[in-house]
Length: 469
Image (cartoon, rainbow, N blue to C red; front, top):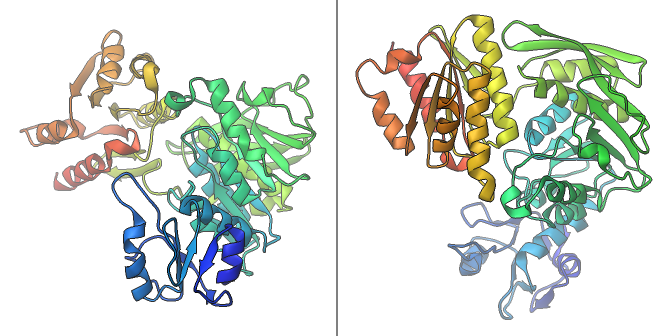
């Protein structure tokens, strides 16, 4: 990235004090622990810190200039909001590139869908994609700043907690293709209803190119109600549904002949517009993974990839860390899906546990933690998960956390073996008791909770325990 101080000030409507407008910086930093040499420092504010306290340090470490909401000083661009200015800079930089931009959002599965789309597109194009969880108003600009003339397509994930956030991200990304995976209960605490969540997710279209394509999950009842606004729509679906009543439908991608291929993988035919067919093996379990593959195929077809390229991109896909990672140890299977959780993704993961356990004739153990941001409906959502786990035949349920007591309550009314721990530390102490480790052998074990529960430590303990036996 190269931009002059003058161009940066113009982009974010800043005021320059005693600084040469022609000076060029070659990147942006928000953290003085990073190399500052030749960069523009953007001080951000959080609940427990204020980056403005580090401006002087950043300049001493080699930063060309810094943004600031405070008074005038040399090498400073004064702005009203450094967070808004960061977005303004990214939006200006994005305008330099004419490459196709694919933006993905949804209540569940957006990261895996993003990664699978990138896997498909990278079979032909040099592809920039959102890494880790850089999908918010800080992370998206950081991804945009990585663009250079060598990239041929960008695949960007847009996350949110409140209404208006997706619109602000769309202004930065200016997408050509918008993908929405589904509308669930994630963030319902802040938005109140699925209908409000739909409205917030649909903000992704606010700055979409006028000739752009909407790629929507046709199996989601709310997404099928979206007014296309004259834009092209491509629906993906787990089966060949009748979309006669869907407005502005142009084409569709759907799955047929879905079969399991062992305990983990599954195969299907991907059919595009009733005439192009790909027989593909999806290397991960779960019906939701078929939908992710369909979304990736839809984007691949739109951007001109061949059947062979789409097939290879799906079949060589590997998930991001802590997302449906499956490890085999000592006749057991550990399903690590701890990155995040909401009611929709919990049920999908439980289905995976059920199928793996039944296929390999293993006991099915679910270690589940709290799901956050569900508001007043949290107890009911958690209890519903417990009931669901019992109804599909999960053999043992271990619940950890205050909210997860409701999962326990929902399970014990129907199921058999269940336990509840108030805190993760309590469960870890329980694991140290004699003979407790042996209860996790010859089992399929799902570990899942919201990000704040940090259940990856449980996964690590289980793996260590398996190694010791």
